[in-house]
Image: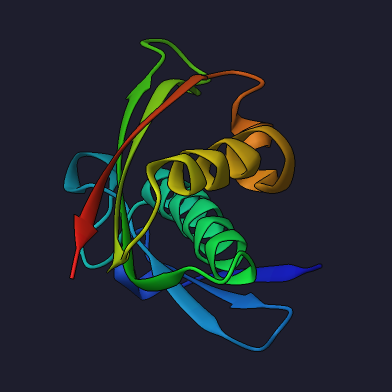
Length: 140
């Protein structure tokens, strides 16, 4: 896996990342750090990536279990250290999983499997942050 970051000097602190799969991702900083607030911060992007990684796992695990999932949302709330390096110290992930006849045990198991075995991002972040989860199931 690879990624190339290109700082855009005329933008203040704007950057474009080109991923190894050929996609572009824009990032920027806060105005008090020289940015113009035109895109997500790099740490917000990291948090969003963790949410995407675990949501991917949960949907895939439920589908493999032949459960009818129609939506999955993850709201992440994170706290960071006060001093540099300002690593994440606590991350809470709240899943809202929507579908038809989704068993509570299957949803809980999918979240646990992602958290404990499959989600590289949250497992890696768990080395510095306390990771907690909760969930709701919405029936359609």
